[in-house]
Length: 137
Image 1 (cartoon, rainbow, N blue to C red):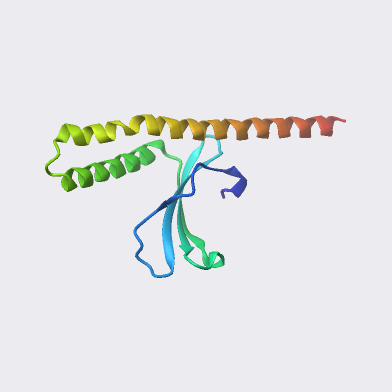
Image 2: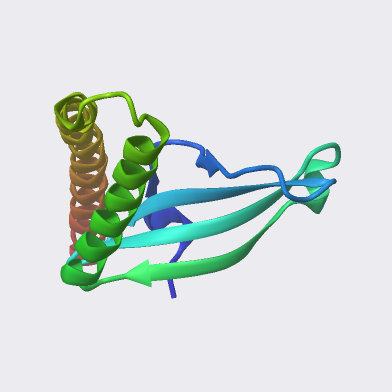
Protein backbone atom coordinates (compact mmCIF):
# COMPACT_ATOMS: atom_id res chain seq x y z
CA UNK A 1 0.00 0.00 0.00
CA UNK A 2 1.31 3.43 -0.95
CA UNK A 3 1.94 5.86 1.90
CA UNK A 4 1.32 9.59 1.47
CA UNK A 5 4.93 10.39 2.35
CA UNK A 6 6.07 8.26 -0.61
CA UNK A 7 4.17 10.38 -3.15
CA UNK A 8 5.91 12.98 -5.27
CA UNK A 9 3.38 15.46 -6.66
CA UNK A 10 4.53 18.09 -9.14
CA UNK A 11 1.19 19.83 -9.72
CA UNK A 12 -2.32 19.95 -8.32
CA UNK A 13 -3.88 17.95 -11.13
CA UNK A 14 -5.74 18.50 -14.36
CA UNK A 15 -9.41 19.47 -14.25
CA UNK A 16 -11.73 17.79 -16.70
CA UNK A 17 -14.87 19.28 -18.20
CA UNK A 18 -17.44 20.29 -15.61
CA UNK A 19 -20.05 17.54 -15.84
CA UNK A 20 -21.30 17.63 -12.24
CA UNK A 21 -23.08 20.52 -10.54
CA UNK A 22 -21.27 20.46 -7.21
CA UNK A 23 -17.91 18.87 -8.06
CA UNK A 24 -14.94 19.42 -10.30
CA UNK A 25 -13.14 16.26 -11.38
CA UNK A 26 -9.35 16.09 -11.59
CA UNK A 27 -6.66 13.63 -12.55
CA UNK A 28 -3.45 14.02 -10.59
CA UNK A 29 -0.23 12.26 -11.53
CA UNK A 30 2.09 11.26 -8.68
CA UNK A 31 5.42 9.50 -8.74
CA UNK A 32 5.68 6.87 -6.02
CA UNK A 33 9.05 6.76 -4.26
CA UNK A 34 9.59 3.04 -4.45
CA UNK A 35 12.28 0.81 -5.83
CA UNK A 36 11.76 0.96 -8.75
CA UNK A 37 9.58 4.09 -8.82
CA UNK A 38 5.96 3.77 -9.90
CA UNK A 39 3.39 6.15 -11.29
CA UNK A 40 0.02 6.65 -9.63
CA UNK A 41 -3.01 8.31 -11.21
CA UNK A 42 -5.44 9.79 -8.71
CA UNK A 43 -9.01 10.46 -9.82
CA UNK A 44 -10.15 13.22 -7.54
CA UNK A 45 -13.61 14.74 -7.03
CA UNK A 46 -13.37 18.22 -5.50
CA UNK A 47 -16.46 19.94 -4.14
CA UNK A 48 -16.81 23.45 -5.53
CA UNK A 49 -17.99 25.10 -2.30
CA UNK A 50 -17.23 22.72 0.59
CA UNK A 51 -13.69 21.30 0.45
CA UNK A 52 -14.51 18.84 3.27
CA UNK A 53 -16.74 16.96 0.81
CA UNK A 54 -13.84 16.49 -1.61
CA UNK A 55 -12.27 13.06 -1.90
CA UNK A 56 -10.30 10.86 -4.24
CA UNK A 57 -12.54 8.33 -5.96
CA UNK A 58 -9.94 6.03 -7.52
CA UNK A 59 -6.22 5.28 -7.62
CA UNK A 60 -4.44 3.42 -10.39
CA UNK A 61 -0.78 2.53 -9.94
CA UNK A 62 1.50 1.63 -12.84
CA UNK A 63 4.69 -0.28 -12.10
CA UNK A 64 5.06 -1.63 -15.64
CA UNK A 65 6.79 1.06 -17.70
CA UNK A 66 5.40 -0.36 -20.97
CA UNK A 67 1.82 0.11 -19.75
CA UNK A 68 2.59 3.65 -18.64
CA UNK A 69 4.25 4.57 -21.94
CA UNK A 70 1.35 3.04 -23.85
CA UNK A 71 -1.12 5.12 -21.80
CA UNK A 72 0.88 8.32 -22.39
CA UNK A 73 1.19 7.53 -26.10
CA UNK A 74 -2.55 7.03 -26.46
CA UNK A 75 -3.34 10.27 -24.61
CA UNK A 76 -0.85 12.09 -26.82
CA UNK A 77 -2.37 10.52 -29.96
CA UNK A 78 -5.90 11.46 -28.90
CA UNK A 79 -4.80 15.07 -28.33
CA UNK A 80 -3.10 15.08 -31.74
CA UNK A 81 -6.26 13.78 -33.42
CA UNK A 82 -8.45 16.38 -31.69
CA UNK A 83 -6.12 19.25 -32.62
CA UNK A 84 -5.77 17.97 -36.18
CA UNK A 85 -9.53 17.54 -36.58
CA UNK A 86 -10.31 20.89 -35.00
CA UNK A 87 -7.95 22.77 -37.31
CA UNK A 88 -8.84 21.55 -40.80
CA UNK A 89 -7.32 24.58 -42.56
CA UNK A 90 -3.99 24.28 -40.76
CA UNK A 91 -1.32 22.22 -42.52
CA UNK A 92 -0.34 18.97 -40.81
CA UNK A 93 3.28 20.14 -40.37
CA UNK A 94 1.98 23.11 -38.35
CA UNK A 95 -0.05 20.74 -36.15
CA UNK A 96 3.01 18.50 -35.78
CA UNK A 97 5.12 21.50 -34.71
CA UNK A 98 2.62 22.22 -31.91
CA UNK A 99 3.33 18.77 -30.49
CA UNK A 100 7.07 18.95 -31.14
CA UNK A 101 7.20 22.01 -28.88
CA UNK A 102 6.01 19.80 -26.00
CA UNK A 103 9.23 17.77 -25.90
CA UNK A 104 11.17 20.39 -23.85
CA UNK A 105 8.18 20.73 -21.52
CA UNK A 106 8.10 16.96 -20.97
CA UNK A 107 11.82 16.94 -20.22
CA UNK A 108 11.47 19.79 -17.71
CA UNK A 109 8.65 18.04 -15.83
CA UNK A 110 10.65 14.79 -15.84
CA UNK A 111 13.60 16.67 -14.32
CA UNK A 112 11.34 18.01 -11.56
CA UNK A 113 10.18 14.47 -10.75
CA UNK A 114 13.76 13.19 -10.72
CA UNK A 115 14.99 15.99 -8.47
CA UNK A 116 12.22 15.27 -5.95
CA UNK A 117 12.80 11.51 -6.19
CA UNK A 118 16.53 11.91 -5.55
CA UNK A 119 15.89 14.26 -2.61
CA UNK A 120 13.54 11.70 -1.05
CA UNK A 121 16.03 8.88 -1.55
CA UNK A 122 18.83 10.93 0.00
CA UNK A 123 16.66 11.80 3.01
CA UNK A 124 15.67 8.13 3.38
CA UNK A 125 19.33 7.08 3.30
CA UNK A 126 20.32 9.74 5.86
CA UNK A 127 17.49 8.70 8.21
CA UNK A 128 18.48 5.05 7.86
CA UNK A 129 22.12 5.88 8.64
CA UNK A 130 21.07 7.95 11.66
CA UNK A 131 18.95 5.06 12.96
CA UNK A 132 21.83 2.64 12.51
CA UNK A 133 24.21 4.99 14.37
CA UNK A 134 21.82 5.39 17.27
CA UNK A 135 21.30 1.62 17.46
CA UNK A 136 25.07 1.08 17.59
CA UNK A 137 25.41 3.40 20.57
